[in-house]
Amino acid sequence: MNTRYTQSFKIQAVEKALNRTEGTNLKEIAQALGVGFSTLEKWIRQSKDQEFESLPNHEITSQKRMHEERRPQDWSHQEKLDMVITCSSLSEQEISKLCREKGLFPHHVNQWKVDFLNGNIQGSKPKSQGEMKTLRAENKALKKELNRKDRALAETAALLVLQKKVHEIWGNDEDSSL
Image 1 (tube, rainbow, N blue to C red):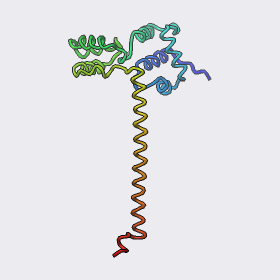
Image 2: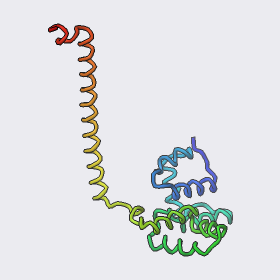
Image 3: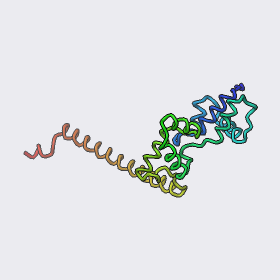
Image 4: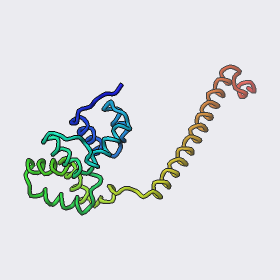
């Protein structure tokens, strides 16, 4: 069964996929929207190649905006700093308007400002593949060690319980010597 989706639905789906948070992946978004993963990937590819069918004016501007927007984590440190400086002299309404134009939310700008003030600009930088591999290996080793210690602790607890039951049933050796 082929389901037909409206152009506005496709555009909104692609915008949602492109503006996703760092923890979510395309499969989760596709599942939430009720479309196939490959379908969503195709729509994203089409939007980047500007292959969507002819659209009404409000959808065209939305589609153009979609190509200009980037996820907040894709912004460079210099661009973030420029945005924070630009927003420092604006009112909240003007900040909201500027953020909408740039594909951001005002809380992104506020977080960037806090990060710059705290000197935490490295925290938003993605790790290199080598660092990620090392961290995964270390994480795996720590989980293995934790699992081993959990098993040892459970075994010790079981032995203590059994020893207590043995003493209840047969009594202590110390009791018989008296």
